[in-house]
Amino acid sequence: MSQLFTPLQLGGITLPNRIMIAPMCQYTADNGSATDWHMIHLGQMALSGAGLLIVEATAVSPEGRISSEDLGLYSDANEGALARVVSAVRRYSPIKLAVQLAHAGRKASTAVPWLGGKQIPAEAPDGWRTVAPSALPFHETDLPPVALDRAGLDQVRADFVAAARRAVKLGFDGVELHLAHGYLMHQFLSPLSNRRQDEYGGSLANRMRFPLEVYDAVRAVLPAGLPLWVRVSATDWVDGGWDLDSTVALGHELKQRGCAAIHVSSGGLHPAQQIKLGPGYQVQFAHRIRAETGLTTIAVGLITDPLQAEAIIADGQADAVALARGMLYNPRWPWHAAAELGGQVEAPKQYWRAQPHHVKDLFRMG
Image (tube, rainbow, N blue to C red):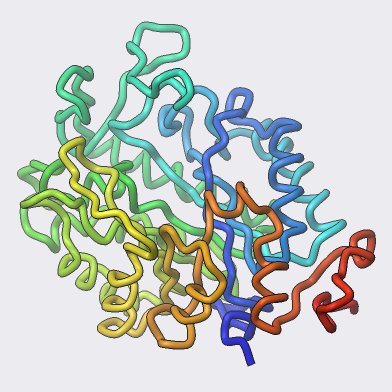
């Protein structure tokens, strides 16, 4: 029996399999609001047969967006536009839906990737002054961010809470907090970006303090059964930066707080990173975190082959796998994996005729 296609309990919800669609920024929102593109993109992802679909990094404030084209959940208009997409997915797909709440910090106010991704000046119509733990820019040529003071910290925390409340109103099945890829929460964690002299900087405990405060504040406004988890960068891939030992320590803190899972990525904090790419190159991080913390662990990063994904689960390296670019390339990846591994997937009745004659009981036809 395929282990990849066994159920997974995540907080108060049960996933039919252990395949997740990782959050992928689309840079196609209108003042933070989902557009028809999101209906098309998330709609096709929802018909993939995966167990969970995580909506892209969704900013908790306008200044928390990576670019002016980023999705947000900070206004009634944002909420209404996303409600339309969520409603369509719910009508035609049984997939579980989560949203990743995020703040870009010093990596905000940038051009979209296909226009170079460089920082946009604060005085430009589509730019703004960024904030961060310390007044250290991401690139040396960037305008330094404003170091968050007490009022700023309180506002960021409140913005996460407000967005989480909206996520509950929208009926999301889960919430992921973005603590990875060099964005604001990761900036607090890493000594390369956090040079504060107060209770939020210096020691590992101090650098973890604000992200954990945000976690606690969000957890407090979510229903008891609704799972909350985090995405982390296990290492900065830079000497002297955030590392796997630190991530394990963070994992222990999260486990004590009842965190539903830890989604293990890496990098993104510093231009000097030296990432050693290869198939499943981040799985080793997920394996150690799972072994030492006992957290439900999601592995991600160049997981492209069904047999590779099956081995990750069967060997106890992680509890689930997440795919991003692989799903863009092959939006029916879970179907093909099920056919190869002898599993079953949910498929809309409109597509039942696609079941191959040589594959028995591929689709779960409830």
